[in-house]
Length: 247
Image (cartoon, rainbow, N blue to C red):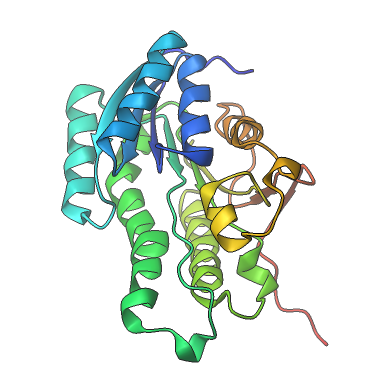
C-alpha cells in the first residue's frame, strides 16, 4: 500500500459504505482526512475508528446541497494547509426507480443536485487546492448504470452519465498539470444503496466496501499516470467513456 503520510484528503459520503472505508483506509496510511457527511453521530463513530487506527481527521457535518458551505470548506482547507492532495467524491443518492414519465420533479431534482451539481461545486472549490499540491488526485464514484440504460433507473443513470462526462472534461482541462482525475466504477457492493436498489439480493455475495477502498487508494497514488479514465473494480481495467457505436 502507498504511504499517504502528510497528505491531506477530502472524502464525501464518509459516514458509511465506500466513503467510510476509503476515509479509514487513507487515514490508516497516514493521510489527514476531511470527513464530510450529514450525520454528526456517524461522523464521530468514523473518527473513533480513525483514531483507533492511529490516524487523524477533521469532521465536516455538511449537506452537499449547501454550495456556499462547500466554498467555505475549500477556504478553510486553504487557510490551514494551503493545498489538497486527494479529493474523493463518493457521495451520491439512488433516487426513484420508476418509469421516467412517472417521476415527480421533487424526486428527480435531488438526484441531479447531489450526483451532479454538488460534485461540480466540489471541483470548483477544490481545483485550486489540488493544483498547488505536488500530485493532486481526484476520484469520483460512478456506476455501470451510466451506460447500461436499464429501464426504471433513469435519474440515477443519467446523473452518473453526466458525472462521467464532467470528470472526463475536467481531466482534459488538466492537461499539462500534475493533477489526475479519474472515475471509479465499483460494481455491486455491500452498501445501503445497493440494498435499497436490490432488496432481494443476498448481500453476503457482494464485495465489502473495504475492497473497493483499495481501488480508490490505487487511483490516489502520486505516481498514477492515468487520467480521464474509468477504472472498473471488477475487471481491474481502465476504460474511457464509450463513444457511439454504429448499429
